[in-house]
Image (cartoon, rainbow, N blue to C red):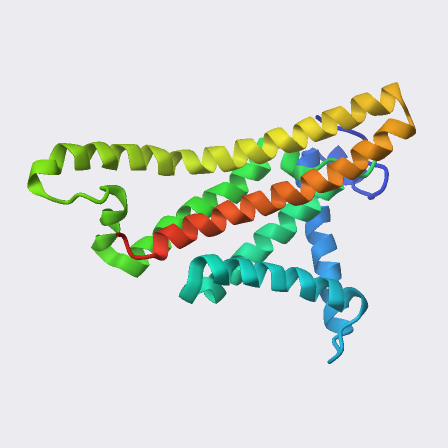
Length: 228
């Protein structure tokens, strides 16, 4: 799905052969950098304005990782917060006329989900070494239960391999469906109905960003915790 950009001057980039979802990904990155610079420039002991907004968002992500991951929560905080902010800004871009949500393209979502998959197992192996295999064989680890352990291992491997796909497709499907509905209702009723749908679109954008980072947090928490 490609549309002529109106709000942001990215038409020349798109004309150079850059896909719209890549161009608007750069726009989302630029927005995040600008907000970060504004918050840094206005740092005060008593927060206000942009600093207040940024602190509220950061505290939310910090509480999320600390309550779910525990002792390694702060270690994963930059990763989780970056994912959450980027996905949220990308989702909200799709609500602006003439813009495209990068997350409505499966390539963007796969580029976000694959690092999550890799980080989960890299840190799992780093934390538990060879004992990480215990996360895949279930609670029974005795010789008579070897066939069951093998079955559990296969099921767990399939489940872990499916995680990047489910993360990508879930976000892609919700963002694409939201955008399609808004376009259809804009043609049917240019004023009244789209206003309500835009409000719903903001809610969907926030929820989908939260779902992505929540699942990422739970995957990382499951990887670094002790197997029981």
